[in-house]
Length: 120
Image (tube, rainbow, N blue to C red; front, side, top):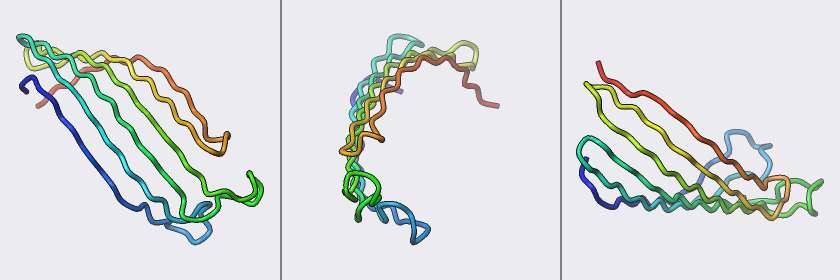
């Protein structure tokens, strides 16, 4: 893959499988922007993934007077990959921040990961 920018824009509705799902259907929109840099067999990829979700109905009479849940999520990812004899070692870090008008759904996550990709 070449060096360069990539983007993805999504918008849609997540339909509830069951009539009693809290919040009912959900409207979702997301934007991903990323930059990949290559040098020889090495690649560095940085991505920002932003997502906004709203429930169509109030989430729960027990939480904040049945407010419709709204969630803003931001994920940042930095990843390194290289190719060695058909095997692709990968290492990365990812941090996610999710804010909601219902504090129960506020999330902060940080992680580091390593992996191997190969094709046969």
